[in-house]
Length: 306
Image (cartoon, rainbow, N blue to C red):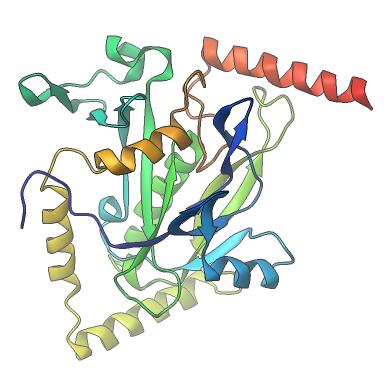
């Protein structure tokens, strides 16, 4: 195995809530109230839709609000990696990632391990340059048991909810998360900061129409079937864990450019979140207040134009 870069689960496509559009000569994230499933190929108008997108869209009346999935691993931290992340907006290179206690940071002498005070207490993280960033890999369909779709988010609501759900499912299933029939579900909420406008985040639940008890029974059955067939889940997770620890930064320089464009756009005050484009990703700050003011001004302008 080549050393120095992270080996991540194979990716067949992307799951997002929104898209990047060109506005006033700039490419900016645009909010949406539905899932979009795209391939790994970009066209003139952005990422091309994956065939799954059309199928789910037709089945759900035009807007995808839920996606049936399974997970690759029983370990929640392998399925969903969340950390504080700072990217160089000019080059797209990851600069620093941390968990609030320690971080890995690029320097002239190489990658250093340093204390991580979280964005609120870090001089390098000013102006929203560093914020929570999570990546969830999921399986869609049964064609490829190792090929995943990745959902990326800098939204606090999604990160908190997905982290909690994964920990709870691991607990109640007896560490059989990879065998549970699950679905990603889009949820909306309003907050004082959103001024009554719905904000959207991603939740993880058992599939619609399936009780928790039935899901647990199916998980036991699928685990037994795979073990009988020789599928070694423990070895798979060991290999994945070794791959993740093979380098300092999960995103390569090539991927970083797209991540910066979608999640860390210039001047977004730390709120540029395509994965959950309309949710806040941090506690109230001056940037939050300024953004809320923009929302109010835009709303007023819309009313005056009617």
